[in-house]
Image 1 (cartoon, rainbow, N blue to C red):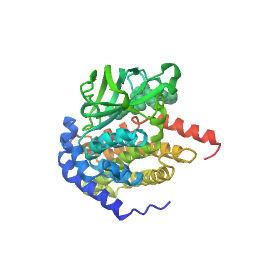
Image 2: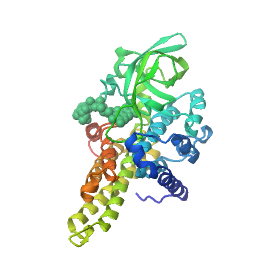
Image 3: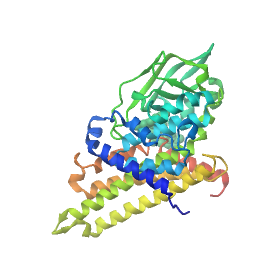
Image 4: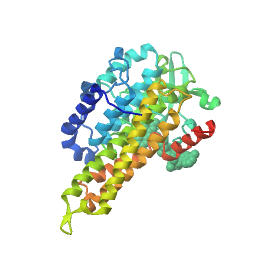
Length: 389
Ligand SMILES: Cc1cc2nc3c(=O)[nH]c(=O)nc-3n(C[C@H](O)[C@H](O)[C@H](O)COP(=O)(O)OP(=O)(O)OC[C@H]3O[C@@H](n4cnc5c(N)ncnc54)[C@H](O)[C@@H]3O)c2cc1C
């Protein structure tokens, strides 16, 4: 497959990279040290037009393709993976799911402010006791007149501390197992909705994470997204696209760790020569590049296939390819992070050099949005179901 980017795709990703370099680059250390997100982050991205790349133009989006969303994610992640992850949660886990599944009323109400960056989005699926086994979620929603009453909690929710609009999954018919789950939009300030203090993380700082609590939280019945008891369909419809876009975060990290390593190895001298003259350093650079290119090819191909498959349609290779792309790219980014630290030696392990931060950031991408182990299970399930690739 040949990836000739269009002029529009090149311009948009260049614009985002330059914006991130100028605006986030100088505050990278503050973002990491203080787990700080620049206050205008979402509004600035809204002004750049990148919060609704694949969303229809009538809701304020650009109506472009999944590959463009991946390109933008990659460029932002090169400079600041934490805030980039918050962008992906806002766009893919919240806004895109609303576009794919919600009623026209909900789309008209919630998409334009999300796309302009005036409101921040999040998605709550994981619970303290339901992570990989998401279907075991316990959060309950019970109909009460024109409302649903939600009780339960959600764990590790990206943007939780700052979200205005959260897509929440809850059991509406507990006896029906996965067929008894529904999705709801819960707004900040809804009675009975509260957010824990920010969770302290090893990496991806600048992307605020929290536990959400629902204590007799009243949600209007019209905020049901998709069908009653149709939550799994909402969850799975865009899952392949989500995996591909999240993989774009790993790609940005792989690229940036390589760029830093090339530069440092040309500058740092030992035994009277730049360390890039040592074959063992060259081997690392070559392996880092190979991992980046392999990740890039898988992700871009999966992005094109996801587009062609009607955003995650069944009966194509997309499910296994999207899972393989994120599996490979996430592990590649962590290995590139580790190799970058090694190339930088003692300095690489010090907080003032950014490679250690990228290494910490990369590790999350082997855990969040489905772990490495779950990704392998999905790929094997698809292969065994079809009996071939
Ligand atoms: C920073 C961060 C941000 C996140 N953002 C969000 C968000 O916005 N919204 C949201 O809903 N969730 C979010 N998550 C949750 C994330 O999706 C879960 O952490 C992830 O799905 C794993 O669940 P768990 O942490 O409970 O681990 P567990 O499911 O308890 O897994 C523990 C270990 O057991 C392994 N394991 C589990 N089951 C199997 C199996 N069947 N076979 C083999 N191995 C298995 C896992 O792979 C893992 O290695 C976020 C998590 C983090 C850390």
